[in-house]
View 1: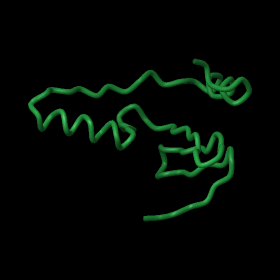
View 2: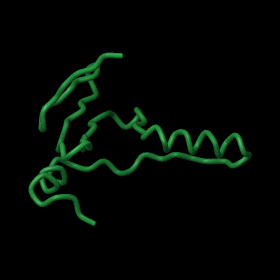
View 3: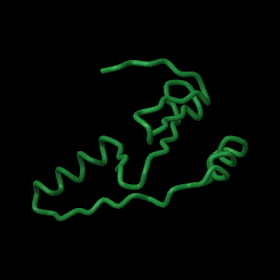
Length: 84
């Protein structure tokens, strides 16, 4: 495992198509943004574990990516904070 330190608004590139940006660090939590092509699924591990667990118990689950946000949405979150 590669371990890197990043400050707020610094990025990490993975290959040619994936960029991970640290948007905010508050206490022991970091908000990150991930810019990746639509064919690459990005899931939190606990969500993937739930889907796998449901499948093992006979439930059929489909995971669909959410709509990508544009840079204006990210800029609004940085200045106004997250909505909701």
